[in-house]
Amino acid sequence: MESERELPTSPELAQNEESLGARPSANFYGSVEERLAAQQRRKRARLRFTITAFLMGGLVSWMAADMLVPDVAKANLSAKPAPSNPVLSQPLLALAPMQRASQSHTLGNGDTLAALLTRAKVEAGEADAALDQLRPLYDVRRLKPGQTIRIHREWPAGQAKQTHDGRFAGFDFIPVPEQKIIVRRLGHQSFHAIKRDRPLTDRHFLADSLINSSVYEAARAGGMSPNLVVELIRLFSFAVDFQRDIREGDQLEVLYTRRFDENNQVAQEGDLIFAALTNRGKRYAYWRMPQADGSDAYFDANGQSVQRLLMKTPVDGARLSSRFGMRRHPILGYTRLHRGLDFAAPKGTPIYAAGDGTIQRIGTYGNNGKYIRIQHRNGYETAYAHMNGFARHLKKGSRVKQGQVIGTVGRTGLATGPHLHYEVLHYNKPVNPRELNVPPQRNLNAEALAELAELKAEIAEKVRGLATSDNSLRSLPRRSSPLSP
Image (tube, rainbow, N blue to C red):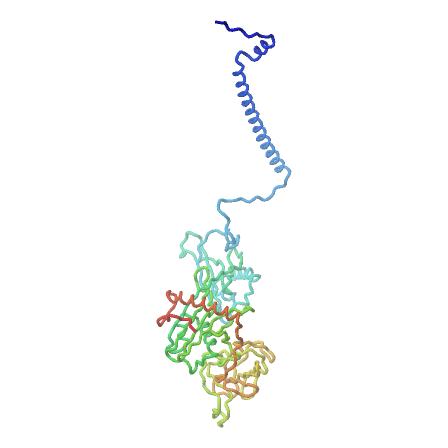
């Protein structure tokens, strides 16, 4: 066999082998690992440098701001959010806890708040200090008889009330339903006064009653306030004669509101939203609808306003004592035309303007005594005689609104007792007020009629909801369709 031949070597090859080592492949991989490790070390070094530089920059900035920028007020933040719009101001919140009790007092005729505080045994100095704080906030001369004032007394917390008379702690009152005035003690003859808004919420109520004796009693039995009942009677007075038309068994249906405060207490009587009166089988139904000028008006199902040019009866709760036509005069003794109606009523009963108009005459007028004559639209005039007195600020040329109080019932002039003599004239010719057939004040156009239809549907839904609840007093079974025209 032929032996293997040795490859020739050269001095350059030997030198290369010696420089690379005996195992060139192993040295190659080892150098790669070393390069990777070196790169990681450089990255970590750069990261440490960046973090150190950032921290040093922040430290330098803080030191510069602390030494060079002037101090400013800093807020102390708590874990809980601060309450918004506290009911009491900061001076009141800072007072030490005390036990308090209150007692209600009522202003009488000709009474003053200062006199009321004196009767409540408030020391003169403390009363004066409290009133001094109140005067810039509220003019006490605006308080009216009947205003309720709550007077507060206080004593240290943890002590029995019986061991202390309690010192005067202030007072509060509600001048209007949406507002409350609070005067509170801060220290010795030191007080603080604030004005606080009272958010009110409307709630709807339903009255559905049979009339046994009068509309007034039926409405009151349904929970309505006296003032709201008077408004209800005026609403129907344009179409119904309450002296002779109402019969036992007639039906009254009313949807009305009341306004409640945050303590769930009645703060104010609300509005009539819907009213229906079934009289002798005929049903009169009216809906309250807001107007573009911000006012409210009542309309029937056909879009005609309930309000007419003139009211048939310009006085509440009166008895018809003498009719229109020929009669024998009770004092003069001879027969002549009685040009109007006489309504017997107690002296001082309010008299209302029968319609919008201008006063043509006011003062004493012969046998008529104290007398007012008002000119209205379309040639109509009304006259009011034997009055006890006139409303303030009325004079010839004054404009009056329908339902505005113009005076009170009296017996001035030739009269046998307190009553109102009421006349209606059309182009200076006397007409019977009971037979008035004046047109409505306004009629709704097509667009407004569509709005009325939507309003009627909303009101019907409210009535159906209240019909199944217990918030109203009912004296008869509910109809299947209570709002049908």
